[in-house]
Length: 267
Image 1 (spheres, rainbow, N blue to C red):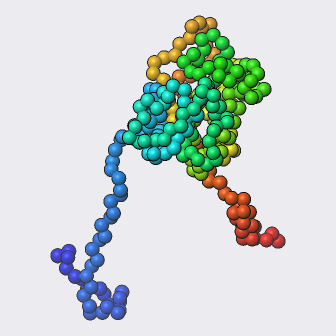
Image 2 (image 1 turned 45 degrees about the horizontal axis):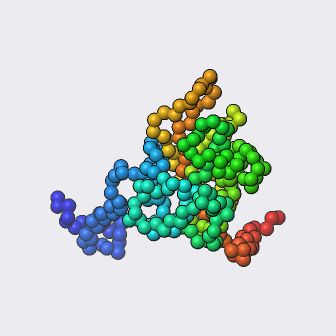
Image 3 (image 1 turned 90 degrees about the vertical axis):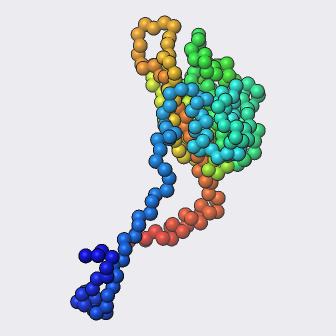
């Protein structure tokens, strides 16, 4: 039988069409989903260096020609492999140049993105962590002068918290806050810095969009070892936050009033 041929619809199922020949509707073609199959994806974990991973984070989150303030620029390591065709407008500052990330020289709601990579662990002395900015020499962690009475890990956290408050002031609504950090063992106690920052920043009005894990090349070592108490950390984090949209006070009040009107009265 020809599948394209018309068919008779029984009168008992459709009396109005009795005696008429009705064609069978052809099946509608399913719409093909957009996009192409690929495994060329930006992944949440990466083995390599800051300068390898940072451009990928920008590609995923920061639009070309965005205004970016790197408030702990240092020697500009993060930017060495960033595509110049993106034409980001980068404002470079650092404490060594006299600009504290907790007191930025920018207006309110002006930046699309803030990048923060402060010294993220206390350095008790000797040659510990010499490859990263030394907290003691930068922020006087173990003495006065760092704008806090706290010491060691608590002082590191306070630096991050205060820098986040300033970043929120400078960022536009939905602006991005890219933060570098690393967990540490302080006074023989595990301090999960990335968890502490996520929890605090969400209280401050940020949404955590992503967590990137960076595993260093090669194996870390120590000059002298008596007995290892904890696993040596060979990874750090890039955390990506987005500033929540600020709701004007009047709008917030009217929204609250509307909700209270809709709420059913309790008997």
